[in-house]
Length: 341
Image (cartoon, rainbow, N blue to C red; front, side):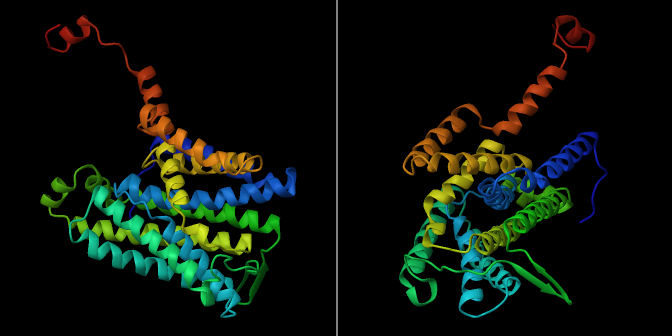
């Protein structure tokens, strides 16, 4: 986890990020109860987008079933708190552990077998459909189509310290703190030597393998880390929303997280966070008028992003900055550099 020295651009991003966190922390004191709750859910889904950006943005592993891990984390907390009478923290450990075990098993059998690209995506989508069917059919545990209701709010008790985080203001601040912590840990991870190896695998796995790296092991590892982070966001969602349902395992949710990462900019970490928060709020407002309108808008946005923003909004911003900073290439400049005009 050794970190290189901070660059000037990274310092600017950290300063802007700190200012954004301060502004977000003030939301509960200046917004309505509905706006605070909606923004809290958007922050939690931002962690979900961050987990997928680690997998697809860095390792270039495309999956259509990432919602499996979000749902497993949510159901882990729901089952632990309502049926086993465990605490939220114990449910968090259960959900994250189950998600990481599933990711480790799937990743080992598929990635070590050489399954990549659209083959991996299709198989993970099949796993998502199987998981949704299991959540619907296993009524004695999952509640069936209705789901699990009455999940208690988040209450932390650790080493003699008790904190009730079930009210909307406390749960919002918890979601914000979890988002900041997850972002910092992910950022520090991608700046390490492991992050560089992962980026090299994403750019050209064949070359990285012939440089001596066990590419399958690195991809399985990032798959497990990504699954754990997605389950963490699902556990937060269950503890704050108070209800879980099989819709958490929907293809629509897996498609939405792809859109967030694609629009925000793959591999940028910050871009998918911004896109997830923005689109979640837009979805909440649009769905208040029509529940059928949002999937249509989602498909249109995805097509527009693929056709016009292949590098996402952050990539477009970087291109604009680089184009402004580059001097025009003239014949005199080329001749002065020793080349032919």
